[in-house]
Length: 322
Ligand code: ADP
Ligand code: F6P
View 1 (cartoon, protein in one colour):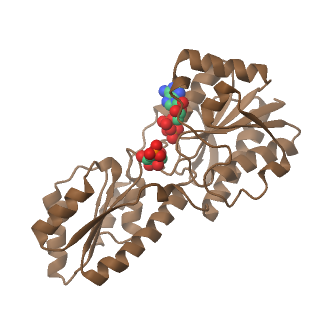
View 2: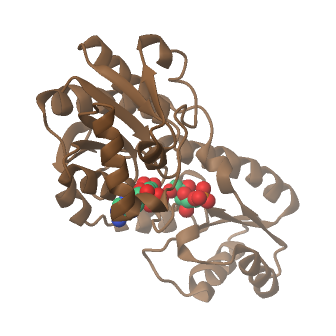
View 3: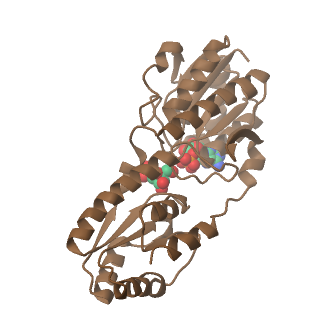
């Protein structure tokens, strides 16, 4: 391949810029022409191509968001939209595409690959919900952002002897919530993978810790657990007598400068996608991080895999938070 493109798709994640940088620099250093596609698959359909060179990715390794912008593009999910994207790639001589995003974006990459435009997916999502990967770009930064925010909430919860119920992102997955629960010493953590009885799991736990002199509490709920945190705070206050407040952390979790881990993994994965795959004429793959090693999978196989939550971690989180 001599001419490749890179795009970011779905929700942005800190570290996407570091991937773009690695893809562009690896391509340029190896004699490829590299184009950035703006606004994900929408840009592929509409031909929003931006020529990239070594300097066009200067000073972005430390920046959150994505310099190529991102989008969710319903049109791309139709055969007509996909054909338009293929046509645009062909008109511009694009021979391969690096798609940075989550599993929705990888489904699009699979469809494109099957229709003659080889794509390589790189997992970029704060949710850490890609089955073939232990780790997705943006997850570590988001987890640390949550930890900083919850630490701040803890200061005020402690000062007022209150309970703070905090909703964190993660879409349908509980990885952010579970690990934030451990890192922040939550009394209870609610995740979509485990159905619990609120009376037993939250109220009774709080009452037990109150007997052990505990006066302030952090409860973490994953958005995917589908708990109304405002309502839960009211219920806790009514049943325990502890004044309670709810906080929805929201999009603050998606922003900010990526951590060292995200920058390093992003750089490794971006380099791998170009050097080990596209330059060798290999597409329809997902780059993944497994046990600290960078590996790759067939996209179709990767999408069929299922990811489970670490139940031992879940057990520990509750055993030590009482
Ligand atoms: P993420 O990549 O973070 O999971 P989305 O699920 O929103 O985010 O997907 C991003 C984009 O990928 C969608 O807006 C759409 O253009 C494309 N996409 C999602 N699912 C499919 C699918 N089944 N087939 C083709 N394209 C898809
Ligand atoms: O996939 C990343 C994510 O931040 C999820 O955690 C969350 O459910 C979703 O995107 C929010 O999407 P939006 O920015 O469209 O509200």
